[in-house]
Image 1: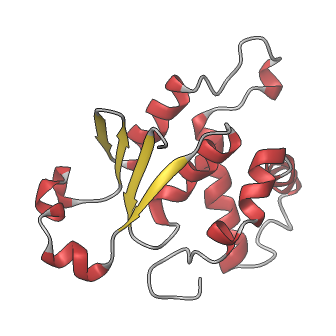
Image 2: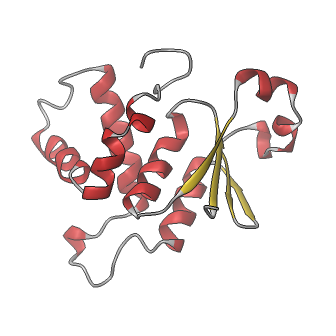
Length: 151
């Protein structure tokens, strides 16, 4: 059984950056998809800090808030290798920015055309082998950015 469990709605939303990080670092995880009906009718909402998702479990540790989860994963998976030159080190923040930029490219195609450095950044990170495989997977491609919409 994977050591990580993500509880979230059937969208990319606030969890896609952590999915990217986990995939890129070669980790497996379990998804507990929370439907609107489950969220409104089950005790899950009352059990969540601030009554919000995502909820993330790492063994006995339960975390809420997407950036806190990303920081935890960044530390626990040592995302930046101190042996690599600084320009090649990756941080949990890279996954957050990559998710934001990829989402914008879906919502506004061509939005990075006037920003060659950002475009190159997206290309470089998206080419990392494990991350590239995740970004091409049905789990990513078929998951809408926001709930109930194509995007």
